Image (tube, rainbow, N blue to C red; front, top):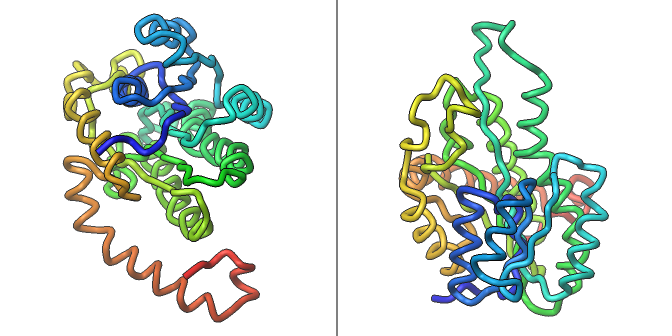
Length: 270
């Protein structure tokens, strides 16, 4: 099944999952606006596939104040964008057994990258997506650790759990609109996320998890299928074990709240 969107902004396309998805999209016929901090990596994508298929936009999403102008520039330059993939993420060790080792600035950067920037990007791109006649999509990349945390990267787990909850609420708020809200939930994947330069306590981190090419194929198939929740590998096992009951409770809560207008302010669509 082909991917249903034809002009895709991939935020976090300079390496790992974002780069792999960008390549897979181009190879299947979509055009991509590749966004990330490392200009040289983006230019390599353009060189590989050509400017007609890939346009590079260097941008640091942690500069939250610049996100509105960034989104406006993207949508003006590419009015046919119908899908935004928000993939950027970093992972750092946070061991509170040794409080002196904790750098709050690092934790803030991690949470801003993984969560706050996603909220700001969502807010910035939504007005353009809402104007479209055809279906459009916001696709978020979370993590298995949103469901089953790993203590050594506590802040990363918290940021992905926050994003997971936000996605559930956003999907509910946008229910019945032209915007599909999709969550792609990876397991551990062999990317630079675990590299020693980012996490010195991990040796041979690039060997951890599912091979990137295998993940990209499974992720692409899941996204192309039209599913709103796409857990992969061990993330799927965790999702199936934990989420059905919790999301059923969420649905029941929405039904109960729908009878209390002052609590929902129109945010519940059943």
